Length: 63
Image 1 (cartoon, rainbow, N blue to C red):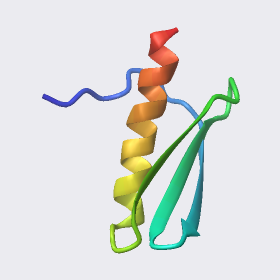
Image 2 (image 1 turned 45 degrees about the vertical axis):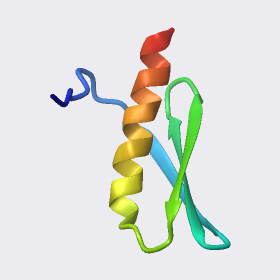
Image 3 (image 1 turned 135 degrees about the horizontal axis):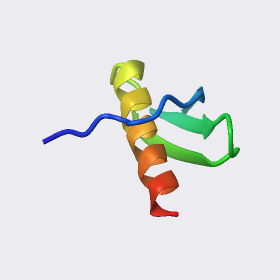
């Protein structure tokens, strides 16, 4: 089962290639909280953005 965010947040993404990996940092526009995920360069960047957004939501809800 997947959960969808209940609130609309402004999220900034930064994608950076580091060797054979692609790092995706997601930053919450309201709190400045940031999380980072990494995956192979061959992975679709949109997939990494979705994973980073879910991780950010998890961190923010952990409170």
